[in-house]
Length: 132
Image 1: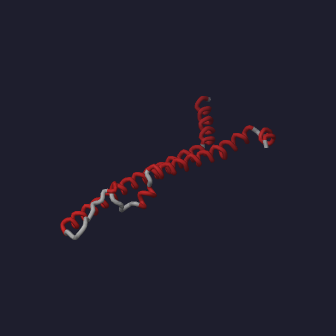
Image 2: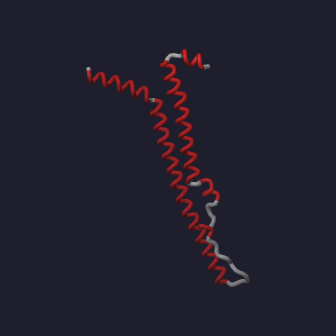
Image 3: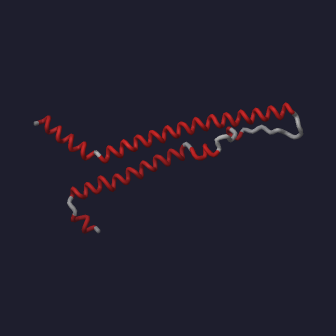
C-alpha cells in the first residue's frame, strides 16, 4: 500500500487528505462534542427522573393517621416534586439549546472545511486581479 501511496500525484494526496481523512476526523470530533454535551447535562437521566423529588427532599407521613401531618407531608412532597420538575426542565432546555448550537457550529465548520479549497482559489484569483 505504501508504494501506491507514494506513486500518487501530490494533488491527489492532498485531495484524499482534505476530503476524506480530515473530513472524517471533523465528523468524529463533532460527534464527540455532541455526546459530551449530552452527558454533561445528563439529559437522558433528567428525562427519566423528571418528576422525582428535588435533591431527594422527602417528608415522612409518620405513623398513625394525623390529617394535618398527612396534608403537610403531601404538599411538601408535591412542592419538592414540582421544584424538581422545574429545575430539570430548565437544565434540559439549556442542554438542548447547547446541542442545537453545537449542531449549527459543527455544520458551519464542516461545510467551511469542504469549501475551503474553493475559497482559497477565489481568494487567489481576486487577489491577483486586484494586484494586476
